[in-house]
Length: 193
Image (tube, rainbow, N blue to C red; front, side, top):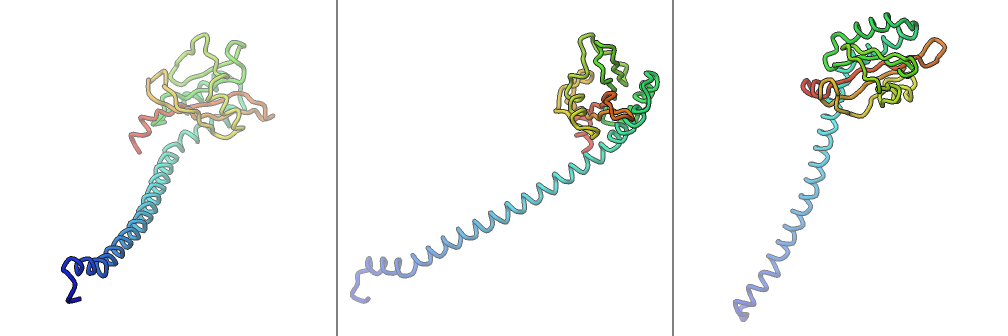
């Protein structure tokens, strides 16, 4: 080692001590990077899942009065075809629904064939309006007695983004009498969550 030049000694020192140390350091950093990345991904995924469950729980809790009113209307309306009774039910059950601007019922018969459409705010549909072709109506019929949700749309009354929640109304014989629905204003609901 004494007879070696300084340059050779430096090379030998580098390859003998520093290179293995550098290799171990790089390997350790890579290992810790992957372990930390996995832990971070797991933590973020867990937090995201918790947040989604919390928001979902909050939304469902706030939707409960609407769901109860839809169920109540369907139960009462299954026993009556009287237009005055149905109008009273729509009016009464639309009250105190924080996130809704419209509660309505459409009969199984289209308007053009003598059917009815009753809306809580007093809105009168235009002559070309046909409730039986609307998503909220078709979704409720397809859901067969369960509460159905339509895709978001721009509400004509408020100009806000809304989602229609609806439920079919069946008579004691099981025959479809119509669909009850409620428009949920997403701005209102999002503001309280």
